[in-house]
Length: 85
Image (cartoon, rainbow, N blue to C red; front, top):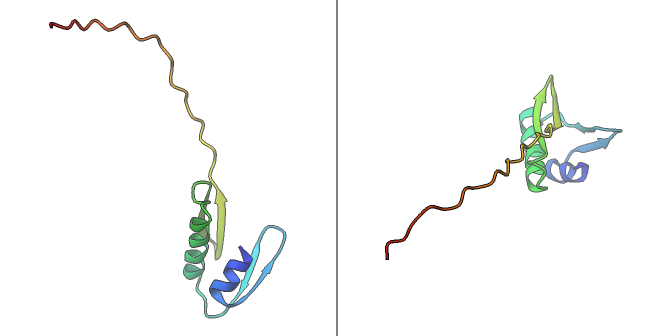
C-alpha cells in the first residue's frame, strides 16, 4: 500500500509496524481517505475492510465476521398435483 500511495500522491511515505505515515502539507485527509478507499477497492479488499476518518487519521478496519445461519433441511412433503391429461 505504501508504494501505491507513493505513486498516486507523489509524496514521502514511511512504513511502521502497523501503520503508514504520509508526509504532505498540501494533501487533505479527505483526499487521502479517497485514495486509500480506491486502493482497497482495486485490490478487492472491500468485502473484508472498510476505511474511515477517525480523529485526524485514516483508519482501515476489518469487518466483523457475521455468523451465517444454515437453512434448516426439513423434509418436503411429496407433491399432490394431479395432471388431468
